[in-house]
View 1 (spheres, rainbow over the protein chains, first blue to last red):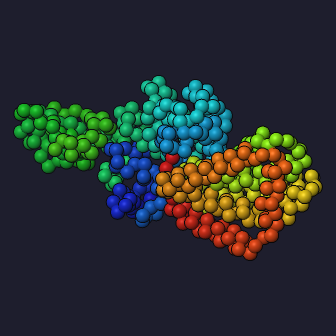
View 2 (view 1 turned 120 degrees about the horizontal axis):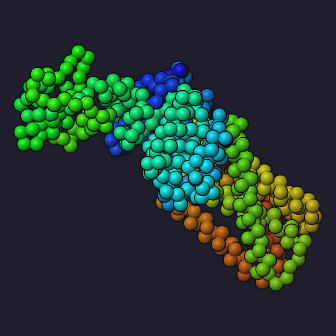
View 3 (view 1 turned 60 degrees about the horizontal axis):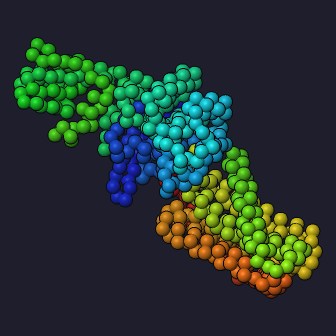
Length: 291
Length: 220
């Protein structure tokens, strides 16, 4: 089973926000979708789950189109980041009502798990969503995602507004559910450092294009940070793919992405350090700021 | 589709509850505004209050349904086609429930008003179809172009306020009911233009709603 999108293009008022995006999401994986604000993450997730139409391109699950296909849609859940401000229609809705509707529409809804999570998060479901904090709304997002039991579950910023304890609870719950069910989770997040350990695969979206898709560990292992005197760093990294150079006086630091068989010339007087997923992401997508 | 029907059936009962509450409010104004109370007359006129409440309720709740429930159901994996059909089912069920309740009351309490009421049922159904379509179009406009929808909803609320004010000012219940009777007696006849308007309204609503819904983006 796999969810495939091919050559997705999305245009808003003549401006193209997704350019020729092609992806294959395999079953039983945890994907991290990372990108800067406005990169097109929510738009992409909305298109993958047929909540928004494409301008061109197709999305299919096991060869069947997802758009207006109830059978395919029943296997997908996109638990959106909730916005219940005064202008939103959700403001007057109680959390209980929202969860009731979700339980009606998701075929394999786990009522027992819902009750367990409501208790765990100490969530007052009788409260109107407009009166809830950002963290509480994120808890609802998490409850819907986990209880839906959908084979492909997408979460948009699930930990936004959550305190550190609740975030830890979420990562633990996610891993438990993943281990028990083998569902595929696609998580869009800005809190990369924390989520890095649970993301098996990473998809980096930048300016509406997928610039990287692959195994998280392989990607992180392929990157390193080289620092030292500028001329030594330049010599050690000659011919390699470098990003995000930082210069202070005569010292220089640069993130290097190595292709198979390549290595930094460590005979030079430079320091070579491993980088985190966040650092590698900043190196790839923070180029404009560096310049 | 079963889950969709379950949702919209429940939504219909909730809306019917709101309509009953509006009808009760209008009735209260009518009773307290009048000098004497004739229970039998009141019971036979009450179905008209229920119809008025259904008209206002549908127009107001339809707007809410479009701005909240349509995107919500789409976000939970329902197809646009099923949401579209589910909404039609809700409108048809609500009109059926409201007119059936009126018919039962008029059959149970015979009298001059009841007799007129029973004969005016086809006209009432047409009026409800027209207003349901209007409410649905307002709802869609509200979602797409918020300011225009808001203006239409304000006009609607103004109309309801005016009606309540009229009822509150009535001198006596007999005067009120004789005025109401002369007004509703016009409903006995079902003019062809009314049938035509009802079907054109429904057709326009179906077309307009589907054109918007088929490419609607989910925003919560």
